Image (cartoon, rainbow, N blue to C red; front, side):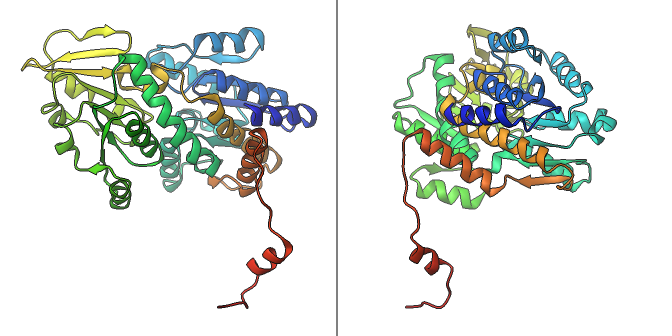
Amino acid sequence: MPVLSAIAERFARQRPLQGLRIGACLHVTTETANLMLALAAGGAEVWLCASNPLSTQDDVAAHLALDHRMHVFAVKGEDNARYYRHIEAVVAAGPHLTMDDGCDLVTILTTKAPQAAASVLGGTEETTTGVIRLRSMERDGLLRFPIIAVNDALTKHLFDNRYGTGQSTLDGIIRATNVLLAGKTIVVAGYGWCGRGIAQRARGMGAHVIVTEIDPVKALEAVMDGYQVMPMEEAAARGDIFITVTGNTGVLREEHFAVMKSGAIVANSGHFNVEIDLPALARLAEGDVMRPREFVEQYRLGDGRTINVLGEGRLINLAAAEGHPAAVMDMSFANQALALEHLATHRGALPPGVHPVPQAIDAEVARLKLAAMGVRIDRLTLEQERYLSSWSEGT
């Protein structure tokens, strides 16, 4: 993670986060550990909890707590009650800055600790789902402090969502099942940047890809990209593997399970497990749920068909694999670190609400990444700069 390392080196010299307490609700992985170390180098006191019950790498959590004396509340496989106790522990610390991956930390701050929320200078949000929730809170007048939508940075969603989710989702499915993708029909629900990445990589591994969408523009783009596009009610009977990546609830429902092939594999790479209606699947099932592999739950339906759910319907790339490769998280977490620095140095200047990542930060992350990759690009000549800033020259 050379970009984040360069930022950490500067942070260690300049200490822009000195005296600030950061409450972070993120996937506790090796990449996140590097981000936490960069923030600590900048002078911050770090309090960290998991943003998903299955995404923690326990050795990483232990390393941060024992070797770096950070306050870490996370364990892989924690139940919902423990998950929220961990978030509440971070809230109780009284963070000055927040970092979220799905908006659970900000939601708890707002609903259960309004006094603590009143002292927060600002925060960042990593995911599409979290930004959607934050904008809803903003519309309802509930957002008490500024949040920088890191997910919307070009150097985040064009790379992390597309290349990171595209690769790590298939990695998680393969690790969980050892399934051969070539020749299979894979249904991708949602054609945002994550869905684009998954569809592209699935096709590259020899799968036949069907896309389902609710947005006519995205659906048209999927058609132009060469995929079959149809409603889920049609795709449900055709698919061998289903991947939800919409950020919405009830994407795969009872009527879809009723027509799926026996042996169908169902996985989610959207933020929460509500994309798959697991209670409906449980109602259709007879007998105990079988667990033929560590991250596979097999439901046997009344007519004898089986449906396999991966990773309890949670993020399969983190439940069964290691999440995105470090090379792509390098840019995402560089945006996080620089956004927190921006909030710290401009404290009081930003009103409550959702704010874009400053363009200068986006450009700096791209510049640092290209330098780390040894890639050089052109620069405008003075004549080109004058031409682009003029309106007088025509045909």
